Image (cartoon, rainbow, N blue to C red; front, side, top):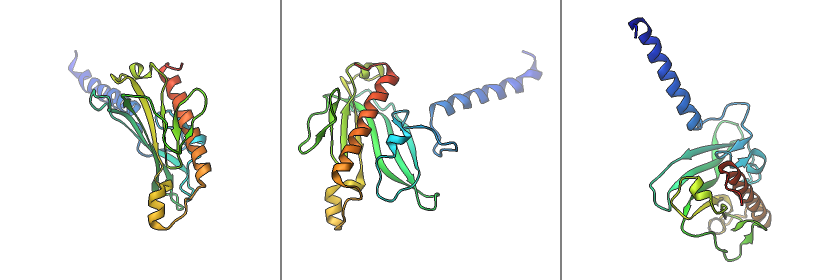
Length: 198
């Protein structure tokens, strides 16, 4: 190769690597226009906005991907859904969604609501789980027999609220319905994305 083209080749190679990295790892800060899907495409913006901590604010997400180890509890994707503060600058975590390998499908939880026909999982005001359709584990590169998505909503934690003498920011029945809606969409969208819908 002619030495005069070497700097250009190196520059283009570095730029190519930067483009690949940028496409794999999500930005920490979303830029306008805001994306219509969050959490690696698992949630539409509209559904992501259902869960609130009573303080309002624009929804965004900080998403991380970790291949972890090859054990059945390896987390593949984790997403923290955030809302902007009233000033629009400071963001606060509202809930967490994790997608990971599991040994068994989601069982029933005492006092929980089922997610509905066609879904294996449950919902409570502060937590929910759904197991993705059979076949998703292999499509997602897991050695585990199942893939489970779990949701945590700290602002609805009854024990924490009781200790603080506070009421839940959202009525528990409404919060349960919202969590169930979120988990149904997560299971549906991820199954479609990985081509493993039943």
